[in-house]
Amino acid sequence: MAKVITVTNQKGGVGKTTTSINLAFYLAKKNRTVLLIDFDPQGNATSGLGIDKRNLKETMCDVMLGEAELKNVICQANQKIKKLFVAPTMPELANVEVQMADMEDKFRILKKATDSVKDDYDYIIIDSPPSLSLLTVNGMIAADYLLLPVQTEFYALEGVAQLLESMNLVKKAMNPKLKLLGVLATMYDRRTVLSSQTLAELKRYFKDKVFETTIPRNVRLAEAPSHGVAIGQYDRFSKGAKAYKSLADEVLERIEK
Image (cartoon, rainbow, N blue to C red; front, side, top):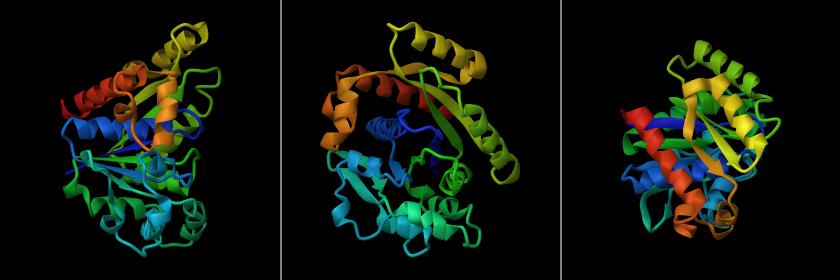
């Protein structure tokens, strides 16, 4: 039965979608069957894995409105990566969130959807929106684990406390099994004092929850989505590829040990 990992941070531009795509890719490369759910209305995880949105008949928008089953919107991410699948989305998901506000059991729609396919996958990765919203809460309730990417810059910890408070509220009220899998330092530049100081602050605050792996600033990482592939397919020898491969190892160690 699948373990569900929601990748979340209310701040944008922290490498959340990049982490979702590349963690899913490397878990699949390590012989796990993986479903990546694009749950961010921007739909960057969908396009970042080369899926043409113009050809989509049903997406996560339909799933959340109860108009489609999750199993029917899933497509294979890449013919070369047999174990990686994607549940795509469209920008209309932002409008769907408004419609969800009046729906019964509106906080558990995603959980019911993921529960229906858990037996088909080893891991389900949810790329959540950069906000504390109804969609984000759905992602937390559906999850077994939260993975928190944090940019190693001045305002890194701003908002993290609020996110953790939301996590604790969800855990107490609706998902007692929810755990913080780990905090991932992203856009790390070991040459700068600021990055080192921010990483030290993260470790002081989160202690052993901080992954040993750090994700560097890397041009190849930034280029890969425009080619519709994960970094491991675009440039598997790049620093970014090596970092996400290492992260996948750490995730497996923390969950499967």
